[in-house]
Picture 1 (cartoon, rainbow, N blue to C red):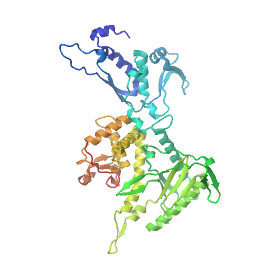
Picture 2: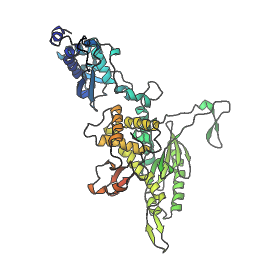
Picture 3: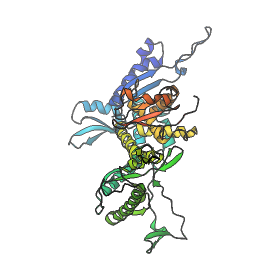
Picture 4: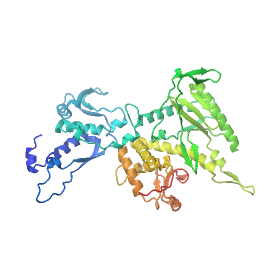
Length: 491
């Protein structure tokens, strides 16, 4: 760089002389990866009038702020012009040795730069790779002089496997295995009633599980086959086998805890009984039959129970639960002392509605939000780690935290939606400290169906109240039962 004239113009200020070139270099290199590039000049401290002014080289660090593009920030390929075009020489000069010829699927041979990224966590670090390479190549600035802070917090959600990632790939494996199990349930033959829907409720299926399940496949050298029980029995001379936790979780409900499972909805029929105890027995029979058919038709290891069936598949254990859509309505039937039949919400009916209707809806909605906003899941996981570190996880349920983070992506104004987990987490902290929790409910309008006249319940809301809309028919799913907690903490 020839900066003698610029240094003379700026009185020897290296930062002011190089800043225009530096900005042009970063804007060209990051290109479509960023929506905005800004900078912050180091502050010059005051000095006594009888002393020499501070040296420019001691003035401090120059900071840059990047507004990343959610669509292109994590792209690992920088495609350039075709090899026989004049622009190819300029492209190779700009990118240096990182530029190479590549053949693409359309048959074209172009200059391209491929960045090293084995997982989603490393892909979020691609902008830092671009910046470090260009500053080293064109300005001779070593990597040790550059500090990239965009991914500093991701270490708290990294998994201890090589290459160490932040779990997105592990949750994608869970989702793929769950989707395949859903197709197998849909296509089961021999059931007296067809399966009408299969819905999941586990946090991994909405990409918000802090540490997603790890597949576990047994080493058969450690077991002996028991023909009578048709199962593997651990050998006494071998180490104790690993325990595989079923794909389920616990959610609070009025001081109690309920199992979350993969919900399997059965077809409605006039043959279903109208007595709640008889319905439970029919569902238990379906659990047995599902386990038998999955084993016969798909060779899956199943362990049925009265209320659920554990299915071992791809190293995971999925907990299936049969559901009948009219059961919550039947549980609401109450006979008055006068012998009149009336319908009213009971603790049992509300719990069942939450387990078989509301939680599957929430999971599918947040799964869709993750497809639109890739930073959503990791932001939720950072928020949950922080809440647990503050010993507040008993006051804020997982679903409540998922909804709080979802509000940052659905209504990000006056900002843009977070494009990285770290930015999303900082917005989450800002929401906790700035929102008027005592006087205003937080509305998470997932389907944009909430009307202005549906906020009449705000007057009895607790200190932290979060509500999500199910549909125009069911109006508001209040957090008072399971999704809201009272947040007694001064910030």
